[in-house]
Length: 248
Image 1: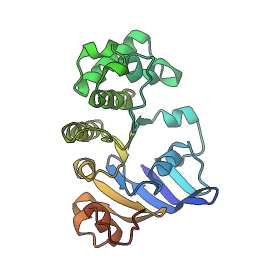
Image 2 (image 1 turned 60 degrees about the horizontal axis):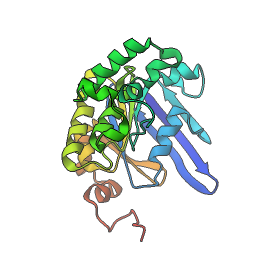
Image 3 (image 1 turned 180 degrees about the horizontal axis):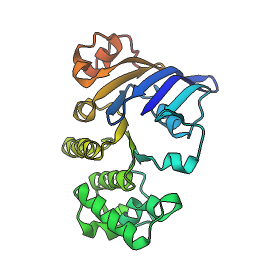
Image 4 (image 1 turned 60 degrees about the vertical axis):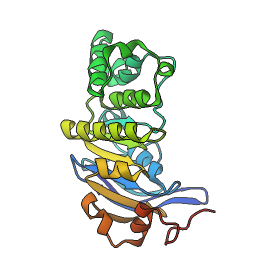
């Protein structure tokens, strides 16, 4: 469903992606791991067209991601942002139905509200939450609202950016389970970026280790612990010593 071929991206003298090649099969969950500043978020932004690669090619469903109808292209995607990224001035249901209230996916307000309440129910939130505002919700509830928004338009592809950041271990487990269930139910293709190894084991079909702008290892999550790759091994076990230099 998604293929990045020898993608390079620099910001001035900061060479972030240095030949990133990665394939995400349709209907599977790919988790990209790696330290902070290794290019995980930039890779997602390149796929979405928010950042233009300096060179290389990105294909989505076999087609060049940089060409064609931009609105139709983005309508295929859902996104759960790292910090929730809810709009403070909008009610919960308006946040969830954001894409259904405008643009090519626009629905009547009453229908959009119904869909929003159903998606809130799917992530374990009661209908009465719909008329609250984000500031009235806990961090875990805000993350669930963000997840409901990500799936509201029934996307084919869902991106998850550090989905459990800032959550306690129990709520992190709840969010991981929801993500896994929803991706399987929808038959969606998922790409997640995280450094939380608990999330990796809970939601991944396949894992890719990104370091220094390239994929050092990729394969099924079941093979991760016995990969033999020194970069992956150091990262998943949190060792200070190894080929990845700790910033001191």
